[in-house]
Length: 320
Image (cartoon, rainbow, N blue to C red; front, side):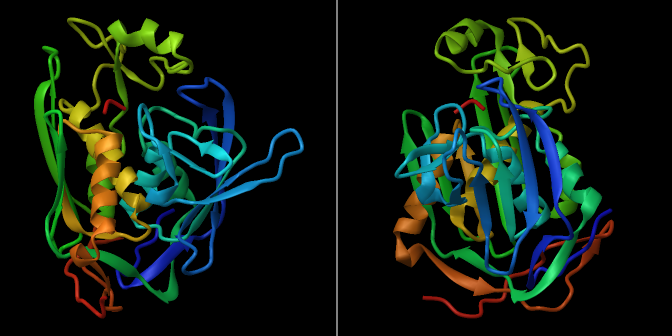
């Protein structure tokens, strides 16, 4: 079941929903439950305590990022708490869920099939509902750019919601240079991005395993690329699945702004580290952004889901 919603009001889940799987890096089983939350809660992770330890609560926020090497890891003064957060965050932001408690009983969000689709499916089964509180957005007011070692990322003004423009360039004959752009809205996210899976190279497997990563990776959750072919028996879900998955990662990482973005994000040869660096640079410049609210009337609908159409300012002040 799905629900349309107004872009002017906050949303949450109609009920709780649970998924189970394994961590792609740890290989350990994990259960994740999405709970409805009150207005203005935002996205919050609740890491279940282990061996008599207390539960840990973490706001999904860019300041909570502790690592970005192979996934986006959130933590606090007690250290890392939950890893591989990007796909569930992308699902929530991609289909427009504002307030949710993500309860997890392990150190890593389950990888599922390597995409955001299982989280979207779980949410669609219970539905999204509107709440009485107005939705607050972060509107980008001027370009903010970060570049290093041939990679660069930029957030620039774009009043019609969140636009993602991603370009990748791998020295591999099956990937090479790919570009993808999308105006993020629930129907477009479901149709064009949610099913794009994470990918990795066979040549890197031994190195990753020896470093304690990718212990749960398999053909069930990763597009595995050999020197001359994709090894997964079912092949690719999209001809450009690699760059589409990078767009999914970017949406998930940008969800850590703490509110939906009104802006265009461009990433060239980037990954989690670059996504986080650009978002941090934006928020560090008070003149580069402001808070706005959307009109609270129903927005245009496409295939049963509300679409973001135009902003109306109300007030202001790697490989994965």
